[in-house]
Length: 339
Image (cartoon, rainbow, N blue to C red; front, top):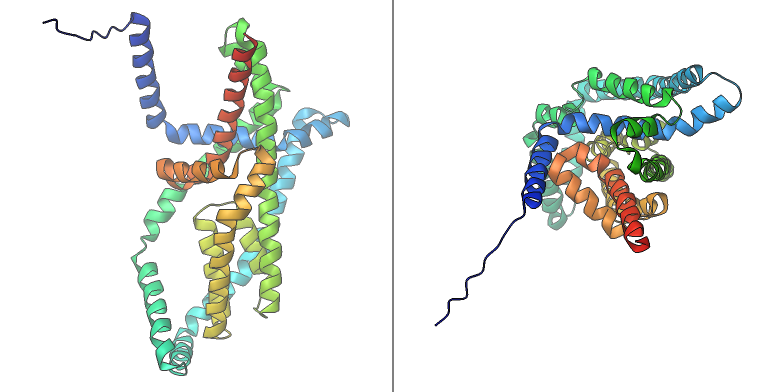
């Protein structure tokens, strides 16, 4: 009786590729924080490069054009901070000082409810309080900003972006230095397409921020919440920070509403939760589909995978990474079809 033995052979080339892949994955995991900074620098450079090019066409030196764009961005951020932060800090301080009064209001509100409904409201408030108290603030902030190590990482992004922008077609020149000549044209083509995708992604993020600002401003104005414009601006800006941003914006609006009445605070909290759900499942997938050409389902998968692998920053850069991969795969597919 013959024995059917299956023999599996690996060529030296296959072994080398497997080892190289394992080493590459290990390297990516080891220096993922650095890679995030580099990728964010590339996104930032791609986003502002069209503005720099326009200024350069007006015969403004490229270095000066970059500095002008940087100054405008810094001025806008500083103006926003000056406009939004002080009122919120004052409101928070007032809330802390009058906390006993608001607790009494909350107790009176719950006592005035129908007994069958009162228990549910008390349970909701209790669950929210327990959830907030169970959050390790230091751990959340550490995960959110650990990649950047504070201001150092932010400065690194600005500096790297500056050098990418300094030379026209700086990315292509870097690719020409790294890759063999036979890959130059293909890599340049991919680079240009990726740059367009990144620029579109940033515009999509800004459009999302504008939508969130508008709908929250309308809702808060209808509800007669104090500082409606300030809170709506805050929600629009924090829209660009996944996970933490909407939570902070919703908490700020709810606390301000609490100074008016507990019922209004519950309505505002419910509104922000509703907006967040609509954003996650409808707005983001559809806007990103228009911006970077990704299927809405793929956008949701990308965000879930990014959050699982890298948490906060994974959610932030998941869509642009998938968009880059889509460009590369599409180019390789076209090349195979041509061959």
